Structures are given as C-alpha cells and as structure tokens.
Amino acid sequence: MILEVENGCFGYPKQEEILTDINIKLEEGHILSVLGPNGIGKTTLLKCMIGLMPWSRGRSLLTGKDIRTLKSKEIWNMISYIPQTHGFSFSYTGLEMVMLGRSSHLGLFSQPGHREIEMAEAMMEKVGITRLADKDCNRMSGGELQMVLIARALINEPKLIILDEPETGLDFHNQILVLNMVEKLAHEENIGAIMNTHYPTNAMSIADEALMMNRKGDRFYGPTGDILNESNISKSFDVNVVVDEIMYQNRTIRSVVPVSLA
Ligand SMILES: Nc1ncnc2c1ncn2[C@@H]1O[C@H](COP(=O)(O)OP(=O)(O)OP(=O)(O)O)[C@@H](O)[C@H]1O
Image (cartoon, rainbow, N blue to C red; front, side):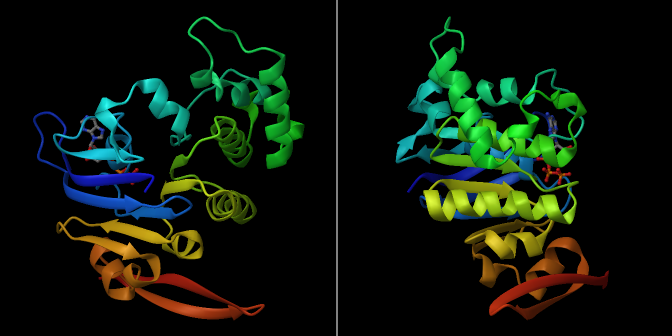
C-alpha cells in the first residue's frame, strides 16, 4: 500500500470540521480521483493526506509508516505534488522549472549541475515538451504549463503523484494529453496517483477508485464504476445527471451529462 489514511479529520482554526473520518487505501499503480462541490475540502484533503497540513485526528501512512515520523526529505523523495496552477506566476524557463523537481534529492547547499540539466532535458523529451525548454513559464498556455509541472513532478522519480485539478481550464486535446499521461504513469510505471477533478467523466476514464464528498456529509468511496452512478452524483452536486455508455472502437466509454438542477 503506497498511502493509507486512517480516520483523518480536519477543520481550519475557529471553523467547523470539514473533513471527518476519512479512510483511504491507495495501492501502488492505482489512481484515486477525488470529487465534490466547490469548497467541500478537496484541496484541503490532498494537503492533509501528504502531511502539508496536520490532521486534527487520525493519520496518514506512507508505505506503511506514519507520515509524521518521516523526515521531510523522505516524504518529498517519494511524493510529487502538483498544486492548482491558475493564478500562479513562475519566473523560470521550462527547463529550470523541470530541474526544480530534483531539489529534494540535492544536498542543502548543492546547486543543480550537468546531471540535473541532462535529466531535465531527458524528462522533457519523454513528456514531449522539448520545445518548451527555453520558454518563460509566465508566457506558457495552461496546457503547456501543466505538462511542464508534470515533467517537474516526474523528474523526482516519485512513488506517488498528487494532482490538484490537473485538467481544469484545458481544452479537450490538452485534457486528454494530461489524463493519458497520468494513466500511463500509474498503470504502466506503477506510480500511485491521487487527482482532484471537477469532471466525473474524466474520473471514470482513468481512475481505479473514487472518493466523492458532499455537503450532506456523505462520503462515497470505492471502485470508480460503482461510486460514480447517477444517484451518488446527483446527491453530491444537487443536479440531475444521466450516466450513459457509448461504444467507441471496441471500448466502452462511460459519460456523465448534467441535465438539470435537482
Ligand atoms: N487557509 C484557509 N483558512 C481557512 N479556511 C480555508 C483555508 N483554505 C480553504 N479554506 C476553506 O475550507 C473550505 C475547503 O476549501 P478547499 O479549497 O479545500 O475546497 P475545494 O473542494 O478544493 O474547493 P474547489 O473545488 O473550489 O477548489 C472552503 O470553505 C475554504 O473557504
């Protein structure tokens, strides 16, 4: 098991608890998608899971060890976290940004050298973004920046990758590019992935498990196909939806269409 959460609870100071008794088990090479309405606590959950914010009760285990007992270098050698990118400003070139992903492997006073440059170049080639090496991150499109951040996450050689809404704001082409990349990493390279998303159809297309939260306090958790049904989605987002299956090139594609407010 790469990551387990046992009875995780969290509330911001002077506010009601927003996460109560969260239990998750993520196996190596599995993708978990986290869904729920705006403000329900998805980003907070990701941060608590990996020790960026402390659970008020409960705990996270990384490869079986309580994350609070691990040194930060041990944690960040294993986990790569890609936060939401909208509104961020990064004054680095693509290559510099990817190299930053090696920081947790470098000593406190070490500078990145030839080896890190070569690794960053190789990773950019693998992800198909060599053309972005010299481009200023502030001038990249949302899709370009997301792929650079994925390359930055991968150069860390993580066992677990955490993505906060990686496909939000991207066009169809770039959404599929990002989703294919996450699926390949998990299902071919055995890296665990946890992904917040606002798109149930995207979760259905790549995630092995889903956790869906709602304002009534329900926590739907289990295999994606079982969890993302019309009833649960409707209860979580207060909309009526149709979940349908389409055959395309001998593949069954499940799709969610919101049809009206509930
Ligand atoms: N630093 C903070 N201090 C106090 N409250 C916060 C803080 N960060 C977030 N919150 C609140 O906690 C709740 C959960 O926020 P969070 O960002 O985790 O939700 P989310 O499900 O990721 O939302 P979205 O789908 O809109 O990205 C919200 O009500 C938010 O206003």
